[in-house]
Image (cartoon, rainbow, N blue to C red; front, top):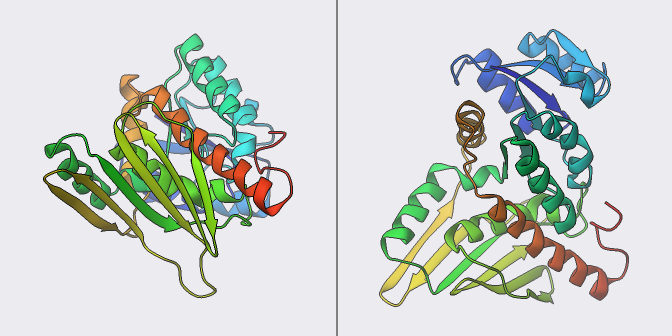
Length: 291
């Protein structure tokens, strides 16, 4: 399987190239082409992975690849970057976040449906062993009444503010709490942004904590039922991108997305509400505005 990558500044791309081209960890899948021109970054990646093709415009990957990873760190660019490949029916993985507006997220899932192009997007932490184990324990106890997830996120961070890192905690929370979303309440206290809402019958609380100068809070999740609680600190290992990469490749081979399309949009809806509340409270335009 020939994989192309658009948006290569993301450190996740180093893992993808290592897993596929150096370690051959995913069968016959290989990164064969990079978009974005012969920048120093792309030249280094091509040398490290034995990648022959480096093209300028993303659409130039068409005809060279069987599936595409869109890995740009700024979710505002993902809609334009992914659309040429969805229009041709290619499997596409959009690294987190899928988009910075729900409108863009729905446009991507609508295009995937219209062209029969398998599409997926997620936080890498959605698939790590700690999250898998917690989700299994939670499922055995039934639909939770309360889910609480905490993790680091910087409203002033590069690449889209709260979206860039906040997607991790929100995506984990919504994996544990399926169902339609209520309106999102946002409370800002010191260094913490708290988003609370319901997902189906489950009350969800997501605590997004601004990282400190030298350390950041760990990712942690709890799921409560009337009979008990399942909880876990979620620790990304050195190969934390590999499980999500395997989920994408399985989708590319079978045509079956690992996450239902409405569930691709839900995290963006939550984060867009948070972003709007931050802009209203702190001043300035939402990070997703104009995307």
